[in-house]
Length: 315
Image (cartoon, rainbow, N blue to C red; front, side, top):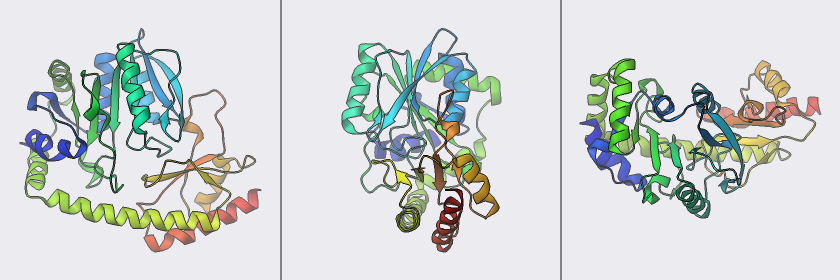
């Protein structure tokens, strides 16, 4: 029942057409990445990733001893280098952690590159449900004409992350293998949660919830954006990252954001240092990530003002 709701209600919004045997329910999108890692990657495979990147995905790929090849990210998304890989892992909707949306031109380039080098793309559309952009681009999978894109997404991020419901869309043979591997790990996601989610979708309650969620997220984004412009004009956001679910910011060069994170936490403001997202021996230490969903909207401007005070003391 849940697969049918995903097929008829969720995927069409992302431009994807899929048969029931091309969909597998997982315990969140991270679990889908784990299953794909076990099935596809090994010590003899290379997987291209965005740099900076979603660190938990990289850690998962390293479980298979795969060679992880970093590719830089600019305002249009991943910048492919000349070294071909067997697989590519990308977050086109809003790149993690920068929030950049991959441009249409860059998407075409990636698909053509994959076809030319006989590569497979793993698309992590982690924020498909929570994306509050007015007219988001279709998923990369929607432009896939040769079955080279494996699509991974979440059903619970905007509703209740603790539900841990995700899914993947792929060739039926790969879905069969993933289902067999899933059975060895946890048999299947709890059927009662699947049924309740299917009912929630079928009755239209999920759409109603998302409309409210998107409105609230947009209001929070605007508040944080305005506060950053007012109090932290020296911190630069990457172009192309509008309406992402967090702000990726670059501080002046002399500011160490690991120290800033510690100081801000003691002052009551939580940010994430950016260095852990880079794949390099000496990652830059003047980036940080700032979210806005887990805070009272009325406290956003005050929090940014506190952060400005900490920056001024450091530099």
